[in-house]
Length: 466
Ligand code: CO
Image (cartoon, rainbow, N blue to C red):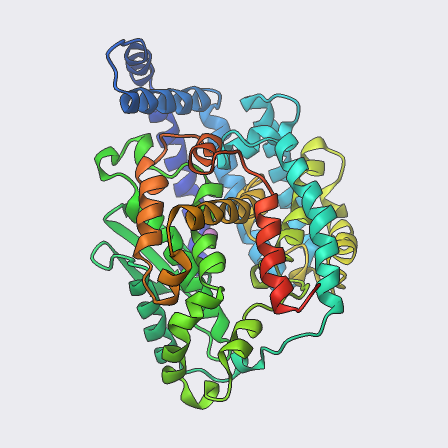
């Protein structure tokens, strides 16, 4: 959309949001759902579909059309203000809009109702069932265990990744990425890949799943791991039950579970030594001049640098969680009304120094880097960390369940893992809650120790730690 189109588009989406809202709270719909929920002869799947639909209906009923339209309008304005203020690295342009947004979000928490903490109401929109109590435990572990571990890594001998920043022909990169997706069994008859500024996955049905990647000439890492990451999202979407299309059970459980799928492929698989035993020779053939003198060991260590940095989306898989920790702390304070929007840059910079030890030089590289708050997405960031933690726990289990999984990956045979994911996770759609799924698949609820053990095992070898 051209820039000038944004104003009318804001009006259009506000009107459409209002209309969609009115349909979602239609009395006839509610009566039908209530009647159906009392029926005794429902199958378990039908029962879950009705439960979820009724839950959505009841939630929607809490909002007035006026509020929905107002939120839509403020979101459009806030997003535009964010774009401009990021470009100019001037937080002041954004602050009044974000303040309006936060006020609305606090109002929204009250509208929805919550137990214990207003943040729980918003969290539930992205990660049903997740609570501040649960996240506080996880992030306490991040603060206490991960910070110590990263300090150990920082004191070790550092590895080199300069090979990744030479000029890599974009077309060749693209072709290699397509091959990786094919190896994962991403179904190109039910999906496609395109280029975008920010990689994402979108779907219209399990038979039409679209992923995007970003190809940068002097950064080989960007294309490879955004490709694998979005491919992981795409496989989940393609594996959702077609028989439940259009119904709640045809959808993903939560953002955290969605992200577990992308991150398992991206990190647990795609940044592992077996994966590159399978693929490195092939990559070298694509780029002989760049990589012929880079050994597999050098490459593997180079793609797994752990190094605190300013930008979340460029962070490694370990320090990444400090970025989320800062955002989580801010969001909670905002919802409690204990911090004002204009105090955010200072808080941000202080905490980046505290947890990551990096100095933020401009707001564009600091508090303005992410789009999420401008969309009104509060309670979204923690799902990224949840995704990594679920991924580690699932992958641990996959290695127990699938005999020779590491060997399969080493041979470029991704089918056993995909079949396991299909069977254990994808095909269920939204039948289970995230917590129940985790228990069903791994025998226990989400536990940070699986991520911590994964990180320790992997990086102790890479950095030669005792
Ligand atoms: Co993702």
